[in-house]
Amino acid sequence: MVADNHYPHKDELTVTQREKIKELRTRAQDILALYPEYDTDFSMLRWLMGWDYNIDVILPKMRHAVNTLIGLRLHKQKLMEREQVNEFIRSLSNATEFFPGGLMSQTDRGDVVYMQAVAKCHPKTLVKAGSVSELYRLSIAETEMAFKLVRRAEETTGRKLGVVIIMDLDGFSMDLLYTPTLKIYLNLLTLMQEIFPDFARRIFLINCPMMMSTVYAMISPVLSVQTREKVRFLDKEWKKFLAEEVGSAHLFPHWGGEKKASIPTGDVRMGGKVPEKIWYKADSHPLEAGKTKVNVGARSRQEIKMAGQKGKKFRWLWTSSGDIDFSIEKDGKTIYPVFRSITDYHPEIGSFDCEHDEEHVFVFSNAHGKIFTGDDVYVDLTAFLQVRDDSALVAAQLGLSAAGVVT
Image 1 (spheres, helix red, strand yellow):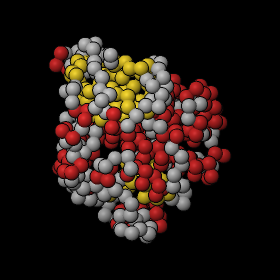
Image 2: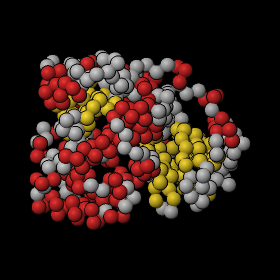
Image 3: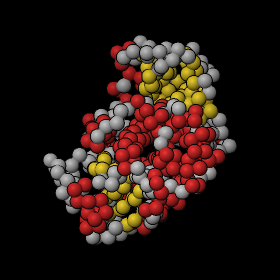
């Protein structure tokens, strides 16, 4: 387990750490200028500790992380209290309630406590209620909003803090290992570690099933060495342990605590089977009509270029025959983050606020594909639209040329 000296007070920083923080900040000036709130000593230290103080490795990763947060407009989200964060995350999608989790508290020390009732998820219906990118967006948003709380506490206490994650596996079933969703979850774990280095202070697993060693063997390969060091499997005395580690006042009654709430689980999302009324229905969406097929060969990318108009939105809907990376670029820079999507059960549906009267490039990348023809991906998409509101969707549909460029 990671020692507490991994969480020093500012006065306990070594000479080497201070020098490395200064060097990283100097070399990352252009990145940090995009998100000033992110520019703190302990944010720099998280990157340094997460990547063995190798600044050459850190810089491109930090750029990707900050660009992702900005692409999701999280730099514009003001600091919220814990309860407000949970409400905000719920507002992002009709399916959010069925993705278990939530911020349970912030300890006296200042760490954020995140509870995830993993086994309450129902993957086979959850994949029908929202796109893969939707899951990525809400997970990133939830974590960054938690870190806004952490950064505030660090400023107050002068000590490096983090997130204590409690994963409750009560009710575990083999349905959780449903292959398509397991692949999505592993992609999500990889993505989160790339964007939030050194994010977890501790990871406690409770109510573990007998087959947990098998499950962990499937997940652990995507976890960084540092993350694996923070994982601890708790025995049947977990309630006592958590009360001592986190504090009873910071745990809802369902988990043995004394934190006041209208129901035992408080405002933590508890998942469950997603009702059919919010599953995706193809015939109910106006963008399903008039699709165009674009071939994205293995080791290649397809670009769709479109002039932007400030004040309008880009909207899209597409499906693909395999995994595909989607993003938006402008002036050679990524302005909407790269997400690897799987559309077997739900199309990718999204929107992006256009802030510039300039050309935008919508990228479908299959760079991760092998060289074989069988790894080509076919994308069925409705042309990218610019509309002021949903009522204009049908009228605003555009055509694609054979080259995949909006005409």
